Length: 122
Image 1 (cartoon, rainbow, N blue to C red):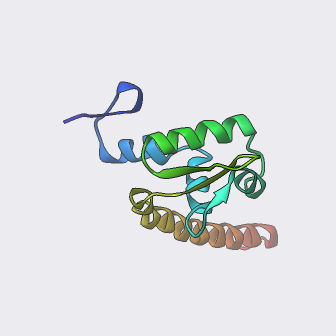
Image 2: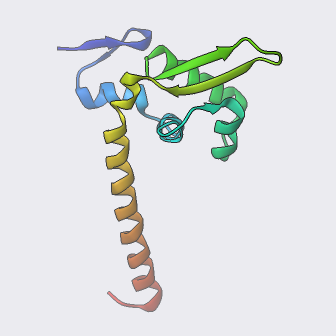
């Protein structure tokens, strides 16, 4: 049975639905950056090399729409805005931790393979 998510897109598979919400180049990194603390827009942008302000804004809005992050605006001049994970957003952390663990193992494997290839070992 298909479920409906953002933009009336129908997902046939739970993996597809998960990737629709947290997939892409930037969303997992944003969520990972927010796993331990609140951050302002500038703090997120500084910790994510290569993301444009426009793309960061777009990704933050989508994550907020999906209920994964909270945008808090403080009544100050200049305005202060902080982003943090919602309680629901924290439920994605085990998925990200599994991705991190897999990435560490993959990078270690690639490092070993590259050393073997450069030394002629098969």
